[in-house]
Structures are given as C-alpha cells and as structure tokens.
Image (cartoon, rainbow, N blue to C red; front, side, top):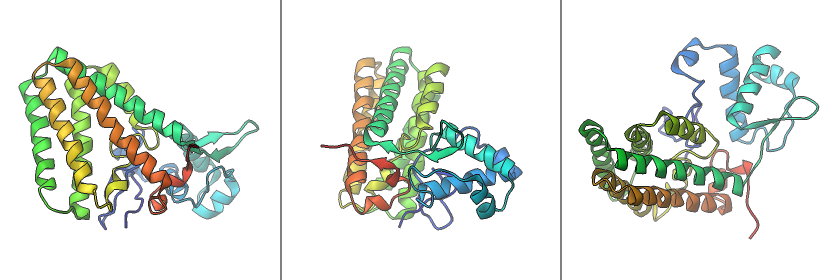
Length: 274
C-alpha cells in the first residue's frame, strides 16, 4: 500500500510513495537539518491533514495542537502560517485557520495551468534552441525510464524510480526553455496541492492498465523531445498540453474510486457534479 511520507515527493524507507506535490521551496535541506520545532510541527501537521486526522473543513485549535505535538504556540503558529502558504489551510475571517477543501475543478484548473506552462516551456525550448548537453541529459533521463518500463510489471521500487525520473524530466524541460520567468511560475504551480507532474501517478500503481498508461506518457515525453530537437515549437507545445490530460484523467479516477480514496489527501477534494 502507498502511504504518505513527511516529504511529499520522496520515497520512505519502506518504499512507499508520497506524490501530492514536491516539497515547498521554503522546506530546504538546511531547514530540515536544523530540526526546528516549527519545521517539525509543519511536517507533522501536513501529515495529519493529508491522512484526514484533521478533516477537511475542520477549524484548527492551537491549544489542542500544543498538547498533541508537544511544542509551544509560537512554532505552531509559524507552522500554520506556512501551511496556509502551501494551500492546505485557509485563514478565517475572525482569526485562526481551517483545513482547506478543494473542488475537483480547483485541482483540474491547477493541472491545466501546469500543462499550459509546460507547453510554453516546450515551445520556447524548440524556438530558442537548447544546448547539446541539455538535450543529452533529457535523453538519458528518458532512457532510464525506458529501462524501468521494460519490465512486465513495476514493483514498488521501480514505480518509485519512475516517479523520480518523471519529475526530473519535467524539471529539465523548464531548464531547456531558458526562461527564469516561466520556471518561477511553473515552480509556483507545481507547489500547489495535487498539481505536480506525479500528483496522481500513484492512482495508476495498482491498476491493470498501469504500465500501459505510463508507456503512453513516456511516448509523449519522447515526442516532445523530438519536436524540441527539430525546432517545431507549435508541435512541442501541443504535446505537453495533451500530456497534462493524463493527469486530468487520473484525477477523475481518483476522486471517484473507493480504492483511490485511501490515497493521501484525496479526501480533501470534493467531486464535481455531473
């Protein structure tokens, strides 16, 4: 079974996946190494929210958290402020915070926005050109994914490796665009809950069609890299826009599946009405 780990996109010691989104930029290795009370409180509170220990819509009682987490109110307040910045909490009109809920449309819009930015990055990379070294790094990343998908079935270790390589390729695409503006906005979007390139990949893990869907995604990776190399900007952009449609499909499956409802954070999403 896949469970949440303290850092969303990392793999814990048991090989389980946490795939909501990448660690926010303010949670650096240095800050974690400092082991401050505020950081530890932030990590624990995020786990509680995504595991539904703090249910969607619930108001956060600071004093209760002081007792539960064993830290003072000051680091609790800092942690709550950071979690609001991440998008998992919302501030209340009369003070305090509540666990945020998301409509399916909210998450779908975030995925759509990521697809738009990735399409723009691909077009810029194709039109402006990128270095042979950058293209070589992208090819090597895709070759490592090919090796993983060569197996008839992906075990947890292979699936974890796929997630890491998938996110690496999407990040390389931003580097190839050569735009600090696009990269900054992309990082903001993938920092939103559920919006990362691997946000709903975990919903494929136990599906009979899992490997087939990953192969489709990998083919799109190959196609966009080819379009960039051949300087076909419009084609590269269209492929990455279409690529995000896979995440849209996985979102729809996750919020409607009884099995996928056990995935971290999915209970925060309200399905849209047909």
